[in-house]
Length: 380
Image 1 (tube, rainbow, N blue to C red):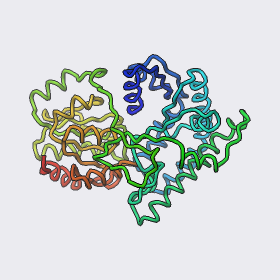
Image 2 (image 1 turned 45 degrees about the vertical axis):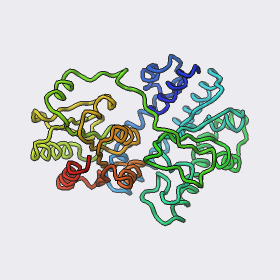
Image 3 (image 1 turned 120 degrees about the vertical axis):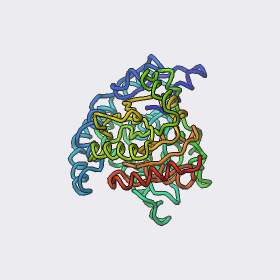
Image 4 (image 1 turned 120 degrees about the horizontal axis):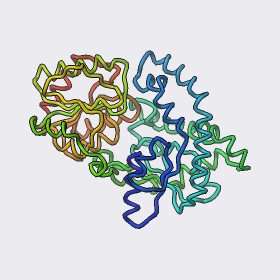
């Protein structure tokens, strides 16, 4: 949600009226920026937080078992997506905006752009989604390969977006409303018309010269979170006692052995007597009950307050965290879990601003020890 909240906050400062259409669980977050909120069905976030999806995100089990789980989930996904299309339609019909700033996963704005000629712009916190990158595959296709393969993955992803998502999940809505939409129209719209703002830093990923003019790299969009979320007294006290601690967080990511991960982290930090702040958040890291005094546990914290006060950061590689650490000029090491996190790990390594660590599914105490030592020796 964060890039959209930041974009909305900026538009309000320019004098625009802004409404948000998010899953209902984010109502209070949206109200930090605007009182105008249109809810989407709660089931989407509930599905993401289900044990089945957490198994996929955490790379639990074999690749084949995760594929089987994904196929089963598709049956549950369809009615949820159909309801979200109706929710998006209701929001647009009620608010009647001059412009829609949309996530790539939102289906109705694309339908409205083509059939109602609405002004729609896609906002993305990561590249490698719509516009091909010669030396990087589409986010969903793993590690880079030959140029021909990298470019081919975007064609595969485009077909899935058009046929499975818009024409698949949107089929009943299109039929109910008498809307005719072809794959040719959609392909032309994505290739020739829709504006896409990649809200990322050009210092982390430079805009390819061969991209069409409607594909723009602007800036990393992030609100000043400390205005809405204050650090706890215990955290402030810890920072007063321990200067330049390391910060470790996996954000909303989970894995197959969170207790092992937590135990190994504490053992390594204790071995080197390293002060640290550890964000356990959604449970990807489970810490022992009795922690050394030089380790402080948090479950949420405003990054714009904390990161400037730490020496370095070990994290999962989400776009937001990667940019926040980069903006503060701190060394970082990424232990990627899924999706674009592997891309950001490669980027910080290429730009020599951090370390591309091992994937979470290859976790080992020895591997973490070596990563920690490399990070503490990294030029600051």
